[in-house]
Amino acid sequence: QSDDKIIAIPEWLPIIFVDSWFRDRVRSIPDDSDTLKKLIKELEFKDPSEDTTLQALSIAIKHYWKEPDGKPDRFINFLLSGNYREKDATGKGLSSCPIRVNIEGGEAEQWFEAGQAYFGKDWGEDHLAHLYESVQGVAWACKPADNQDKYRKVIEWLGVVAYPRIVDGDKSWEERNRIKKYIEGDSCPKERLSPPPRLIDRLNLLSLSPFKSPSLICLLVRNWKDYYHSETEMKVKCEGPRGGDRPLKQVPTLWWDQIKDQLQPPIIKNDAIPARLYKCWLPYKETYRAICDLLPIIDLDKFSEDKRSVEQWLKDTVRLRSHISEITLEEWHHILAEQIPSIINMEKLEADKSYGDRVKTW
Image (cartoon, rainbow, N blue to C red; front, side, top):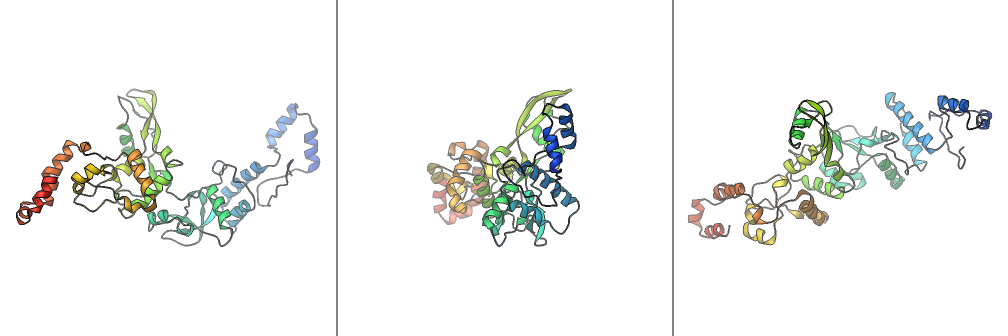
């Protein structure tokens, strides 16, 4: 019992209570006693509180994963019976709390760490379910028959999310070389302290189809402010050519580079060649009328109710081009020397004079 409330403690929590007479005897010793302070420090005496309970719960969960038993539901049931959500679950080490999940491409109904699971179609998260469909190993949090709202709040507090996480990949020379491109002068990332690449969990953006990319973009936009924006850059410790510390450098993370350089978004049907995101366009009306058939233009209709927010994000964050003056000389050369001749050759011009008018318009 704490000073203001009674805390129900199950027997399996690793908490030991001293007898009340001993507690009273310890409390009777003056606070300025060095002996008391030493005793309390060595025996780790604490007044019971919610923090104490959560710390013990974290220890019990760690023990469970080392030696799993037949009662993994006791942890989540304990949390459901209380009200701990004002605390930091991740900081308390509770994100490894076991919850029921279905594994994509694997066995149904098994226990998994909450901090690695996702909300899927059962929870109304259609974009994420579509994005990760057929991606082996994705853990989908099961939906209980009762108390669904409270259950969702609790497992969300434990770390279950409705958007793809950014995770650490394996360290590699490729990542170190990529980082080096962003560091000016003779500085370079410290070899031993070079950070691992930050990646979107379980996604290969090069092979992600334009059919699925709208779901990813919608999730990025919806969670940009609260999550993804802070993950677009990382600090890198640097050194000089002869060693010695150099100032920290802020560089783009790998996943954000990949979004711009590898993701293939849906584009409108025209004569343009499908392009990666940073090469696509959201043209002004004048540019659209002049050359829309030749530019890879984002098909905003594929984003349904997120259409306007996606458009704004593509303009402000990805900085897609809009004005015809932004076409580079190299791109003009490609359009005139290769793209237009591949669309309309001499045979077509001779067979149908309207093709000539079309070329003149371009």
